[in-house]
Length: 330
Image 1 (cartoon, rainbow, N blue to C red):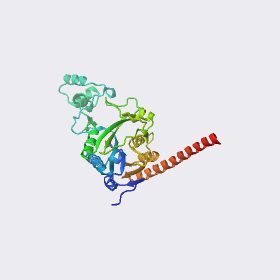
Image 2 (tube, rainbow, N blue to C red; image 1 turned 60 degrees about the vertical axis):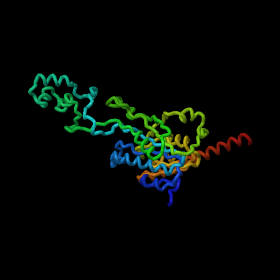
Image 3 (cartoon, helix red, strand yellow; image 1 turned 30 degrees about the vertical axis):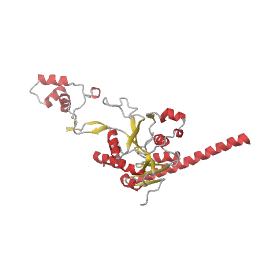
Image 4 (cartoon, rainbow, N blue to C red; image 1 turned 180 degrees about the horizontal axis):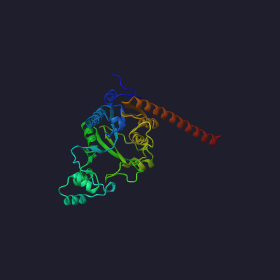
């Protein structure tokens, strides 16, 4: 069988392309899958199809990872998971009411006019029928239709179960604290729920000897983030070329922690190519996969830019060293 070459970005479905990677060749796989939160590239995928995608991709990693290698998945919980089984009860958000009428006032008026219909009570109180219905029944009514309620869906258990069934074991987890959503909004959220300001990095291990080499990081890096569970990394300021970019510092840290120079780093949801760029900067080989041709092209351009920047940095460093030597011995 002809295997995929390293230092390339491939167009295709990860579930197909992963089967074409040489067994036991990947030291670290870093990727962030679709989050099932309704982005444009996810809309054709149901929740069951999404979970099936994650399970299949995780399962296919067992063969391609080196013994002792790692799989790092960056993902967030689904904060607005639609659930038809939830009661369709509307929270009484008094600070957002356009009409100040309370449930007690409606009941008092109805007791005074017991033979009136809901429409007549609304006319008496100077409001809509929907307001009467919301105050009395707590129904989440939108234009006469009942809206599906949402809840928070935790995804860590899904990943852990899929990994364990594939003989990959949870080694560690980190929390990436990013910039909070709606940070410029006055009220942040309309309920008691917290704003979205962090994601997880779940790190799975393939059984085998893992070399722990603390010299990969400086003493300061070990203190500041290497041995810390919480990473504070600013979000990407502009997603103009891809709607779901993570900052390059995130894969850089994982690459520095879990790989040696010349190891191969994989991202099977490569997107804009951030993981590959981080691998290039850190002197590792890379491999990327994406099902969208436009993102394959974007990732290739990102890699080209990373190579160019690295060459420029290396040339500047050599020039500085040469200048120092000339000054010292010239």
